[in-house]
Image (cartoon, rainbow, N blue to C red; front, top):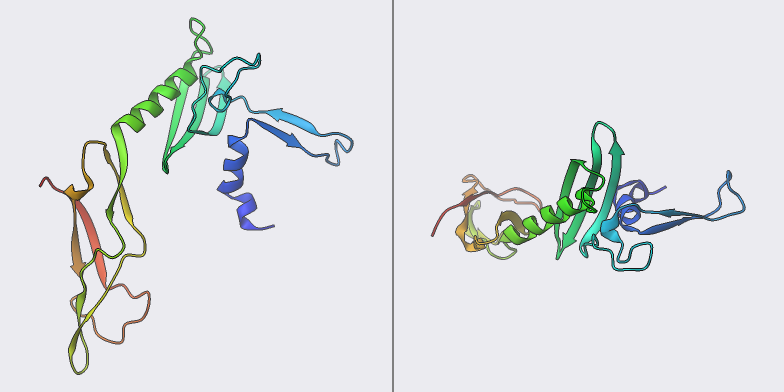
Length: 193
């Protein structure tokens, strides 16, 4: 079995499904069994076919639960344009005045997160200056780049140009340089411009 079958991708796929149809097994060889996800954030309509007031269009799943000490609980995830949030609500009342608190609180947390925070790219490929390398005979400049873009979670009103990378170059870089050699380390700091 491949590693991906046991990893997070399979869990994520199963956790986001509204209904899962399990094929026959050695314990139930003659029938398919249907399992319904109890996470109402994922359901467009309620069991009567009416719009579900707790449906959250960016929800991607996770897990509902209840115990007497912990009350009604929900670990939920959402992904809006690549910005993933995970919430944990514990100790909610099952229903309070007709409202299922764990869903109401979770939706409030998601709305707060998406309204107040953003993911910003602060260093992109191709933005680093060339560095000087001391060779045996001469000095040359080497084009360097980041392996992947660098992102930060910030308050929504903060622009990404306020994050200025402080680049530290290895001053003793000498040839030969091989692919994958670290020639720079960057510390990203926030400063007002």
